[in-house]
Length: 452
Image (cartoon, rainbow, N blue to C red; front, side):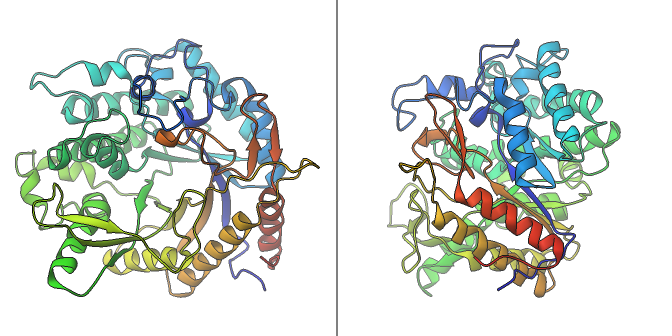
């Protein structure tokens, strides 16, 4: 049965700098908060780091060849801020610029349009260490957003002639909540609701980044927000209220300011001390709205006296990935329709991330038979087609990820790639899903599609 997507639908694959590049001490790159976080015992499940990762810093030509073989229209990569400005300020580092020059040129030569994310969580450590006048640092400090605007201007000047689409900040909700509220990601702060200034400054960085990119001549600027449908554990008033609060914190706290210029009503008091003019900066016109989707959340009210007013429940009755995430393809359709109904002027949507962790490796014949990933991709593309059928303007799907990589606090224990990476030898082996994705892209362009 064919996947009902138009021949003009765009396909791509995504990665992030710290997860694949390695070479953290090469080319003048400065340390990032993830280098520091990984060096702290107990932070990473397998005790690893991105120091070598997939060695993309040296093997980028091989990875571009894999992209070309895949047949994608675009490749979403991220630029490591510490490669461009090792301390987060000052002039561009020539060696860092040269690396991305080579990569962008290789992509264009292969016929692949770059979608460049400027911040995929690898903040220069110097900005996290240095306190501002108010004693804050990192994304808790307003100055970090201002420095980001300067960094975005440098990237627009140096790379703007070759970048098709820009994303200023990847998943500001994850960066602020996981990094500053819960302490599970770098820089490892567990401030709970006191982390909300980090959310505001990441949003401000988005707005300043869009302005800098536009000033530098960028034609296509969007975002990449992580979204999840919120399911409530029961119809009780307490569960409904807790689910609504978490929906605001995870989804609406970031989409509302970007798309409407206002914070959700119930959260607005937390930002009363921020300059009102910031919301106009955050609310920049966008050429596309990027959605990163993995699964819904099932939310219930927390027990009395709990640190947070909500808790997460397991979603039962669905297959699970090796990461123990539920596979809910219709959740993607649900989320896309929710966005379309909530925002009157929603820009065209691009799925900037969607993928799954299945950890099977090569068999005795060197074949990686990852049929569950094929099933996942097939079902999620059909969910996108269903959303399009309901009137949502979805233009593309970028799968996470091109190659297996460093999965943040999980280290190398989870494999999301279409290509298997042997981390000892760095040998790349395309999986069965790579061939399926290639065939599916070609079939959709022909106006038909392969079976799942």
